[in-house]
Image (cartoon, rainbow, N blue to C red; front, side):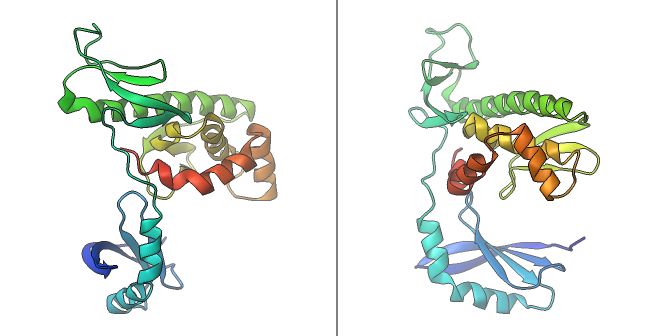
Length: 240
């Protein structure tokens, strides 16, 4: 198991602006690596055990142009505010606040006419949209996961939803599955592919040829779904 620790109070000057650096040290890392966190626009710098923090920061500064280009290419942020357009299973919906006088279901959130309609105090608007999307994600994922598991004669011990920065799903050796709630923003076939992928690990705990054959049986859209995530996955982290 790798040993990781994080230092988050570091900043580098990138194209004239301070950019936060999350420093990770890993006993399993063999070389320095850099990535840009799509959600927080920070640098994630991973160091092997033999490399000093100073060497790591020099390496990151030497790649300042690459970092600046990656940050500049990020999709725009879309807050859960009135008028914004947010996809549900890949279909754009406009966020609309409905006054209590117009709708008796005070505090409720629902879909209607290509809109996500939200009642209640405007101060809680963004939170209610986020809560609704998480509930909808859980409903879609749980239903599909159990259906796929039944097809391959396996059982699921538990399902959790989180908001990881780099993974869409995971499967533990104890048959518990974890998924990103942001999959509810992707097209239905993409969400279904990620669920099928993790359910397939209940039967084959590797990425062998046998595993990929099983994924293909559960998800006919696996290839196109993987390509969609490769091209568009970063944008899902820019909502909310």
